[in-house]
Length: 283
Image 1 (cartoon, helix red, strand yellow):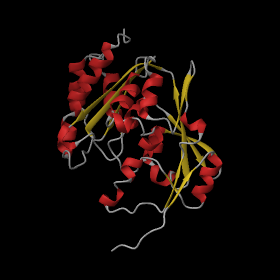
Image 2 (cartoon, rainbow, N blue to C red):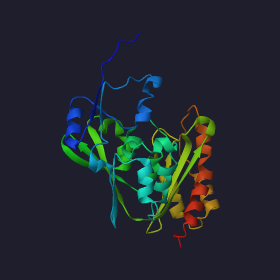
Image 3 (cartoon, rainbow, N blue to C red):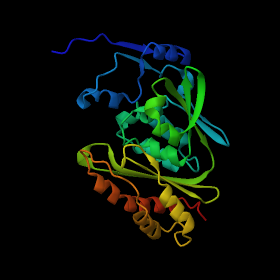
Image 4 (cartoon, one colour):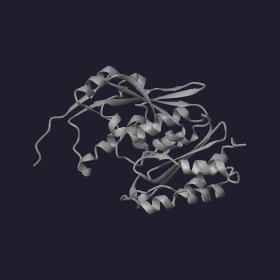
């Protein structure tokens, strides 16, 4: 029988309290659903954790004419309601409102979704990538801002000594969409996710999640669309380009094999472009 471990839990009321707990070795309670499954993956639960839900500033969504600031403790449900009807954020709203299931959306936070290390199927990651979000961290040296792409790539190192506090978004999008392919027998995790967004200069941004271990921008397809005037947000032509420029290495998992994740990307892109056109804002 494994020896018993005395665990500690801190509910911080301020960022300073949270950072003090981090200095003592506490892990941030982010992605709690994923964390509770650690023992099944052969990973020990942390001996000490600190929760951020009592810090008022981290539970707010601030919407200004030119930017939006999202606290790390904002839940998926609250995020979806706050941005509902905000032009350009249709994809982020869809990501928040369709992730997992209603029960989880009421408690799962933005910060938790992004900070659940080794969780490849996070819905918010690709949606925030096409928003070109900036992540605000509180470190032992003070606040730090980092682009979402760099944050996702370097999470393991960054989160060893930092806490995600806010997500910053520019309001430079005219339309966006978020398309996910779940397999019902596999539960709530999507096999593949494609997020798309169009900025005010009619440039399309595309990001993919759940196909590889870390979500990333599909720059090869973005460049192909920009160079191919015939695509012009035509769903069929864009799907053809997606097939030609598929540079993903699909990950194998219990719910799907890597080759299948790659194969479904073109149809998801086609659906995504159709969703963008449906907004009526690309003319």
